[in-house]
Amino acid sequence: MAILATRQELSDFLAGTEKRAYKQALFAVHDEHVALDIVQDSMMKLALKYASKPTEELPLLFQRILQNTIRDYYRRQKIRSLWTTLFSAFTPNDQDKNQEDFDILETLQIKPESNFTKEPDAQLERSQLIGLIEKAIEILPARQREAFILRYWEEMSLAETALIMKCSEGSVKTHCSRAVHALATILREKGVKL
Image (cartoon, rainbow, N blue to C red; front, side):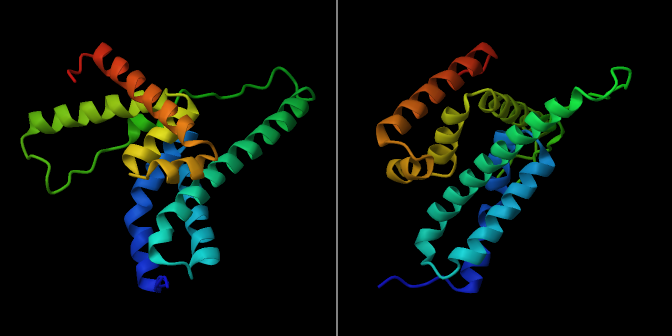
């Protein structure tokens, strides 16, 4: 018989997964505020609907909720885009629309952790490498990025990843393999020795 998660265990799980979930959502939606909303919505759904589940089931449930919340965001955006396009036909052409080129990943700061070295040159090198990896992950196709993050960042098993992505284990392997090769190529082109 499985032991159900206590409130403290659920709270500890959510606190431990928050930063990784945020980064995962940020890679998917490219908007800091939307990513925060997605993570908060996902955490609320887990707490409201699955708080009585065993502790060992929480990571898989949360990842599935997170991925579905990201997909829901894109569905809503598609509908909003359709309505915006339809309504834009009725707006005058002389209105200036202020469009800024803004990349949220450039504004993220890497927080030093206890195992980071204190030498400035090593911190700079590590920061630059992380920035290169994040930019490389960002340009991966969505399914490859999702598979890569779930398998290698979230350390989900092949079966768990396939369940979350709603595809076969073979498809997960293919997506991961393509993602790894693409990332290696991108990083080599940037001068990173693997």
